[in-house]
Amino acid sequence: MANGLVIRADAGPILGAGHVMRCLALSQAWQDSGGAVSLITATESPSLIERLKSEGIEVVTLTQEPGTEADAAETVDLARRSAADWVVVDGYHFDAEFQRRIKENDLRLLFLDDFGHADHYSADIVLNQNAGDCAGLYSNRQAHTQLLLGSRYLLLRRKFREAQVRQRETPAVARNILVTLGGGDHRIAIQEVIEALAAASVEDLQVKIIAGRSGQPSLGQLAGANVQVMDQVDNLAELMLWADLAITVGGGTCWEAAFLGLPCLAIVLAGNQQVVVDALSKSGALRSLGQANSLNKQALTQGITALALDIEGRREMSLNGPRVIDGQGANRVVARLQSRPISLRPATQDDRRMIFDWANASATRAASFCSDPILWETHVAWYDGRLNDANCLYFIAIDHRQTAVGQVRFEIKGEEAAISVGLDDSLRGRGYGVQCLELATDALFRSTKVARINAFIKPENIASLAAFTRAGYVFDSEALVRNLKALHFVLRRGEAHSWAPGLGESCRVGGQSS
Image 1 (cartoon, rainbow, N blue to C red):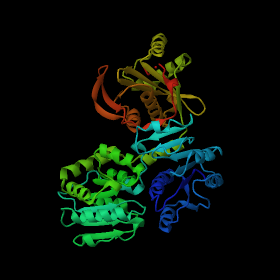
Image 2: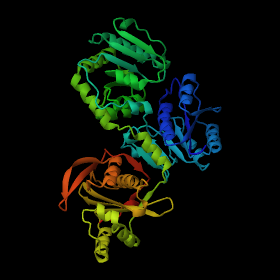
Image 3: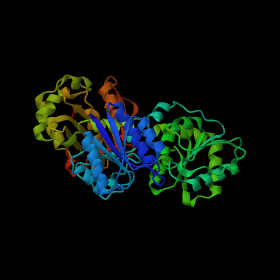
Image 4: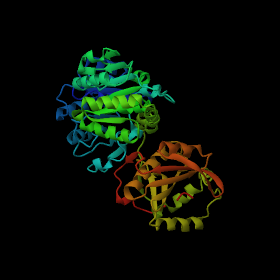
């Protein structure tokens, strides 16, 4: 297939449907860019397969044992027959050897991961959407393996992105309750939630339960409530807009609820869900009910009652969730897959003339706070000084042909750094600016103790404002630079996305953009 994507992911009673659902989100973004998608799966659920086919995805049933060498061979065969641009693999039964099998066949591989379950990573890109500070999980990776980390790369399905509301109304009492514990078999947990709802001190409940594979629960305890039980649904976003409060399992559903501003109580049913619950709990987007195996009906009842009656707490949660997730994660990932990757190298004396020419380009001078042309003698003294300055980090960005496309410089003072970025004038408009910013930002945070990066941009420099915003920088205040109005943007350690290409101490160099 031209511009094709081949996905390898499974779903089932134990696995649930989360891996396939987030791959569906990636598929939709890939299709929106004009690409075609095939998914090879061991899934036996007819409804899920029909759901995928209804999205225009070719579904191929796996004939081999999942996660084996034969599975990898079948995946490779489909990718070759499809002439796929990328292979995407998502699941905990895919290990280091599975990655190696894909890569040894000269295929580009995106590996979706949640907690560093593989011993070694050889994929071209590893995506962990759950936490932005977990690069240490992937220290045992190939030099070419790049990381996409954090909620900036969260894979949200189209219906959720389309359902986003500017501000959710918060009723005094949360009576519309949505219970959804994933696509696996969680009948015991659902029954415990039903018993807790029955004991909660909230009247006139309207409850909708997505039972999934758990089967029809016993509703005797909820006789006084209006209850609807559903098996599989394809309108979860609509149900989340209806609900005042969700009781859900940790994982992808928590991200979806947070994006839509839905207050959420989360139960951790598996260890890999803890990182999601911890991240969203820390951001104030949900409340954790803890591990399912340590829950008791009294604690569950108290948690439900407390949040249902806490209008201010729910209002804060409704505001905090959308602050964490902007809904553009799938588009960002697709942009990465479809772009020609760039990398960084230290600036050297050999770059002096090139940087001089870039700095004097008309677009660069117009964007600078001093638009006067730069003299060669002035540039030489300035540039040499930067290369010899231990508090200056100076990078040259190069494309896949080893051609220089831009430069990024950091001036470091204590735990803060000021950033300057510039591109070859002939290469503007190709998305290199965002890649330069993200790569250099990650390199700085990995190799220094800098905690905050400051950027000062002219208000009329729309391209730079867009690039810094897309790279995760946040507007802080207005400022004056050389008596000219500037917009001050900030990126703090821990708030950054991660696009980590395996840069090491070799990037500790010394840099400009006049």
